Length: 65
Image (cartoon, rainbow, N blue to C red; front, side, top):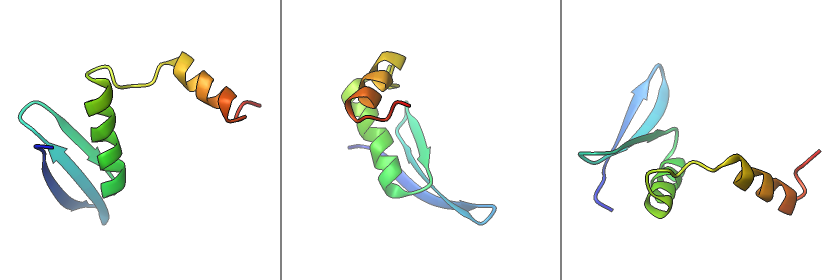
């Protein structure tokens, strides 16, 4: 996917990073890091879920109280 991936330890915690010249992502494990990169790749620069999208998923899966 064109990212440079690295792993480091900060205060005893493992931290993973994926970087290009324009983008940088960080997560506590490789799977979470891949998820963030995949969201950005699929959804573009405005990759965050909107309140309406979150509500729709919560409704669909019965997660509302």
